[in-house]
Length: 522
Image (tube, rainbow, N blue to C red):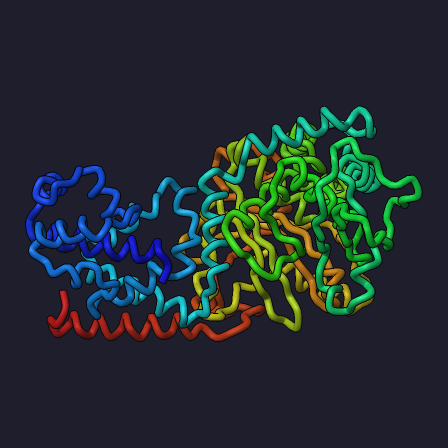
């Protein structure tokens, strides 16, 4: 058991004994001959007293010395002990939400037996749905982003400063997007990187990664590459201690651009705790996850400068009709993927246009539709059956785009980036309306698997005034649900599963009605 947990358990037991004795901290301090501030530190688990002080506390509390120092909690509190010693609690970023660990401890120890029962339920749910520590950390990051509306001025400013410092010498600006060649030159010249586009291909087990970083001794900022160093090399001198960055050769150039831009973010922002592989196999801490996010934010801001993209969005929203080519043209101008563009939308549109977005990315292989990434600023009615392996409504734009792409591929007509789609979705039960725009594409590293990415926002009069093309009568209207299992719409030609959950709820409602009729319930 860690020293921190021993401190926490001692502080918990002391607080319980003090409360049971009806003593305030001041009164206990007077009886034990100690300061109130010192006892406060003990109860918060920050300090562990010496033996003589423990004896004085035991006497003041009317407790046996051995009972007070025992690290064993009573049986009704065993889940509290298990939770406090878990990696999830130890690594959860309470401070990022203005919540110190001792604050949690204070809440739990006010009603420890009830808290233990609650935590027992939480742990049981986590085991039942196989929730891992990474699931909690990723949920914490999403919450952190949503609290800040996914906009971080300091990262925007860092990207602008980087452009101002290096742009003139390398030929890019906040109006002229940076190229792949320039990004590679920046990493090599300014940060001494060795770029390798062939190493991953030599090992089939590594081809699932988009990139791998192998750190070396950080060079001086003005160090220049070797005179015979090519732009992308698959050779690294044995004595070379420079950072090595391996890129998957099967990526689209626009994907490689983002990886290089993100790598510049790690270096320029000084982020040392980071993932070394993309996608990462393991999340070791929230700080690692947060640093990965910051570097990616920087990379997106570098590829799609704030001022230029806001001007493009202003023109796009001012169009009198829906013109998908205008959206597709942004992909070409900035040379990015749909996911990069839409995620950048989620950073700028809520802050600069006052429209709260949601961002969804689905993957589909063999008919299986999986939500792999999401951010929900618009309070979209997300399907509630994820943990139950229910089927997402196939009327959602994301599912429709994937089905259309699958049909096009079967006919030999599939494109890498077909024109985007749009619809206005009305939720069947609530009547709430959301606009969704999206792209579908094939996944280059996962043959046979497609991806769709959508952004959307709640349809309100204010939004309709801001986005003029929403008045276009040609925009499709669709009635949608959450999951097939919960949907009452029986005459659905794309239903993927019967409405079993809905039918079960209807049976319960009939039973409740029967109970009310005989006066058993009010």
